[in-house]
Length: 258
Image: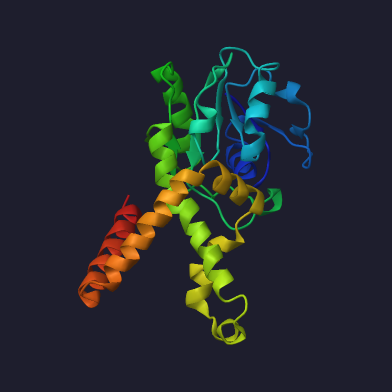
């Protein structure tokens, strides 16, 4: 099987490094070059599966460009953290939108590594005309990356990632802004604040795309967050905190046991 990867940043680079050797893998990149990586899109001809791993704001442009190089038998997926905006157009190739739930605060080829997707979940949002056989091929490659596929719809996906990824990033940024003018707080900030605000280190191009393109869902989450903060503050706090502590523990214990 021949696999193509367009864009070799953190996600694309990690896909390339993990699959290279197991499959015939070619990469398309403007910044990385080697024997099987170039800026020439024609190297993608004959690929069975192509991963589009470019920034979200460039993805639709790249998908259009791929129509000049790929035929109707190629399965193409993207890795964007939003799914509705890529799901409306029909292409000559077999397009199946997806999103790996993996990453770090770093970006670029130099920070990519083959183990990035080990134990991760990978959302897939098949289109109405997706053939189950094509889905199974993509699922098999995703499994080879170390991830588990979860099938959902674009709309439900975008609501869910607002809850677990986009709004938490915004909150981390807001917490940093809280202490921008408080020198004592800055001096006292330690591991708890560091860990809570890690997402403030997110790639700013990616962060901007998420905030702009998923704005309404994020606003709904922020509203829900404010309600839940008020509810917790007005409750029997210790009892509520104990329940939430147990919920959080069980959530990640269940993930680790898979």
